[in-house]
Image (tube, rainbow over all chains, first blue to last red):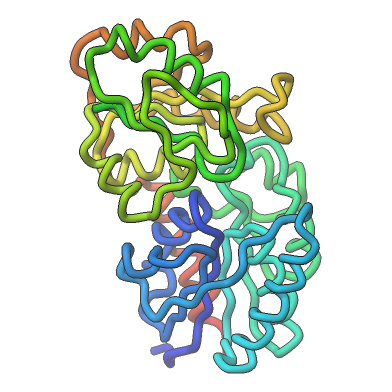
Length: 151
Length: 158
C-alpha cells in the first residue's frame, strides 16, 4: 500500500513529451501535475493539470533565466515529492531546483540518444537521485542505469 | 495527402527541397511542417510550426508521413497508426549537433511500418511503390520494464 504523492512530470514539447506520455502508467496513480513547453499539449493528451514552462536550450540564456524563474515559482506552489523528467533543459532545471526543495528526482534520458547521454542528461546525472538511459550500451558506457526503453 | 515534418527546432532543407522537387510527379497534396526554414517552395504547402492539434490532424489524415529520424515522429506514427518514412539528419551536412539520428534510424528500421530512407534520392521509389504498412501502438516488453522501474522509484519515495 503506497500513499499518494505529488508528482511533477516534466518534458519539452516533441519527442521528450511523447516519451513521458508513454511512461505515464509508472506514475499516473499519484497526484500528477504535467509541465511542458507548448500550450495545448496537455489537453491533447488528456494530461491535466498541465502547466507551461518557457522552452530553452543552452544557446538561449535569457530563456533559461525565464525558465528558472517560472519553474521556481511553480515548485514553491506545487511542492512535489517526486519529479520525473525525460528532458530536455527545462527538465534539468526542474530537477535541480526540485532537489533543492527536497523532491526525489528521476531523469530518463531520451531514447533519441543511442550513442551517448544527451548534453542535458550529463547535467541531470549530477543532480538526479536516479538517472536512466534507454540504451543498454549507453548506460554501461556512461555509468548510469538501464531499465528498459519506450521503443 | 503526404505530410512531411522535420520537427520544430532545426531546419532540414535537404529533405524539404527533395519533397518539393518530387511533388509534381506525385499527384498528391503535400503538406510540410518545416520549422525555422524560410526558403519559399513552389510545389508543397509549408508551415513553420503547427499547433499540436493541427499537427495531429495532418498526421492522422496522411496516406504516409515523411519525417526526419526524430523519436517524436516515430512515436507519433506508432500512436496514430500511420506509415512513416524517416530520413536521418546528417551531422556532416550541418543538420544536427551529432549523428544520433543515424543511430535512431538504424534502430527503428526493424519496426514494421517504419521505412528508413538513407538518401532523399530514394524517396520517389518508396512513395510510389504501392501501399505501405502502418505501425502498431502496442507497448513493447522493454517499455513495460521501464514503466515498472519508474513506478518502483515513485512508489518508494517517502
